[in-house]
Image 1 (tube, rainbow, N blue to C red):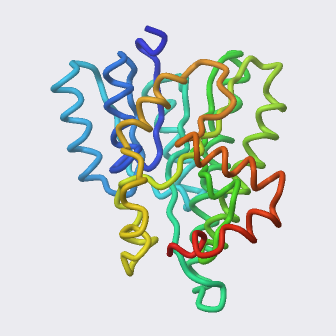
Image 2: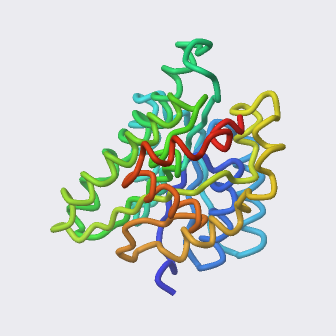
Length: 262
């Protein structure tokens, strides 16, 4: 019942984890506020939620890499609902390329969406949460933020940045009674890989290990408005990440071809 009547903003809500999270929030009585570039998809999801759960579901078109648009849209949200209880920074994308083949425009876009947009959205809600002495910021990072692999240098760098930002923010707002949580999933069966893995090689190699977006969304929704520091899925992959942080040279030596799944 902790989400009953609470306003939950979800970026990247038109598909994947974001879409499933909207339903998970609504199922718990929360009021989803959906943000993404695909307005038609948002409309479809919002209408389905309102019809199924008999609660309001707001949506706004937003490209989080447009920092001026972030300010405008969040002001519109506050004008409509007054308070934001939970912000889930879920919008993000990746491109799996070796550094030598990297498109620098794609590099800029990845940082703009995965890092700068996340920070901008957070900055818009923080003053209101601090004033009310309550709130929850949830940042969707990745196991790639803990252990980098070949052909994911820029994506991993953005997720390392998200984890660094999240950990610092958590300490900054602890005395304000605001919770900050990092979500670190492994590969998830979503359309993320339509862009990230254009060859399809990575998906073919790890398909059996992929998480279901519904399962990840349920975990996130259950953690809302609780002081959970991190959610790491699957557990075995997080154990590997921890082991890597302790013994990086050993892991890089024995992993061999396992790192070259892309």
